[in-house]
Amino acid sequence: MLQLSQAITNRPILSLRTGGQVGIALEPIINPNNLKIEGWYCQDKFSKHKLLLVSRDVRDIIQQGIVVNDHEVLTDPDEVVRLKDILKLKFDLINKPVATEKKKKIGKVTDFATEMQSLYVIKLYVSQPILKNLSGGMLLVDRTQILEITTKKVVIQDPLQGKPLADTAPASAPAMP
View (cartoon, helix red, strand yellow):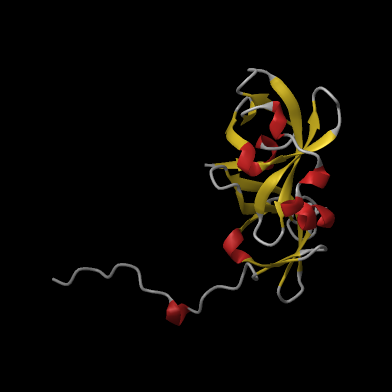
């Protein structure tokens, strides 16, 4: 099931052991190499320190919040060696400029949809400048259309570039009498 970023941002972290809230998941940590949510920056409810919640420690994501086994899964950022390189990047998908492979500016990422079982970002919602789109609509970009993600921008296939008509299969042919 796909969920927008608000379903995984600023959410309570709930402990199965105590049955209560142990922190708040502030923002996701997204790996720019594969667009997978590797964890969350979070705030510990008791010490108010900024800690990390690694995605493998999440039992479930429900409407009330993110469910974990216990408070002990919240970790100091210095202790998570596996995510050290990703944390250094401080990668944020929201407000990242989007351009085509021909360097045509499309807009900025305003939201993203995540598949909740795998925690992969599946779709990007790109707002276009008012001059390009008078209706103020959004462009929806599937992860298969993404060619490259850098620290400065997201490069996608040209949205108007389709397959040549000769390569497309014809619709169903009428039955012959």
